[in-house]
Image 1 (cartoon, rainbow, N blue to C red):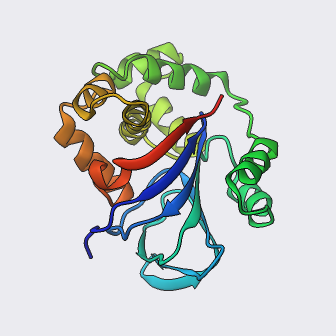
Image 2 (cartoon, rainbow, N blue to C red):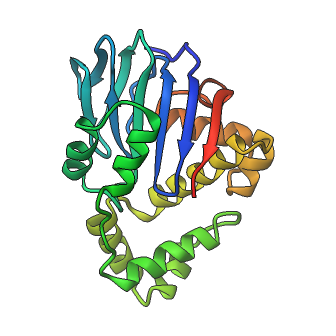
Image 3 (tube, rainbow, N blue to C red):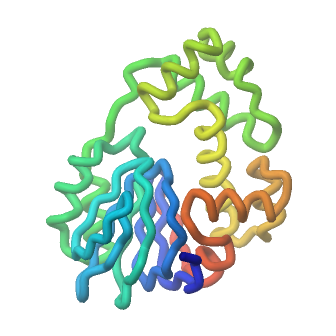
Length: 227
């Protein structure tokens, strides 16, 4: 299966979530860190979910589960949310019952309880990663900032965040580059500023995590940046 349809519509982008209303193209099988919710107000969307074909009007795809959009014939709402901040069940309960408009979904996710980072070492590690994204992120330096050994850092991130260091860095870089492109930066500049070697490296990473290229996912999306 190959991605062949461009995504069109509107994206409301917050710090730890994104809301999209529009037509979603087919994707190659992929998995990403974000929880994803698909809300289809008209006909159900069809998704390949861990090898099983599922058609539904309300669907939660939890973090790191392999999936692909097979068919979404009508405009639908898609929500991406950071697992570090949102529990999947809480997110589902809040959004499955919300009115299907961007303002109402925005209100529902703003009222959805966030997780708190009880371990200050995780906060220091994430801050160190974000501060180094435009250059090479050294895991040892991140561990030192968090007052951890390298092995302790890896175990803590996997158990509490859900990602090892390398995948966490890739995820944060991808978020930064996508936000910059949607805000108007050229793809090459956005890719470099987020620490990718070039625009091709960024596009390959986007395809791997979301099943679409940068052109298919971002070229025809209208952006609203949220506070």
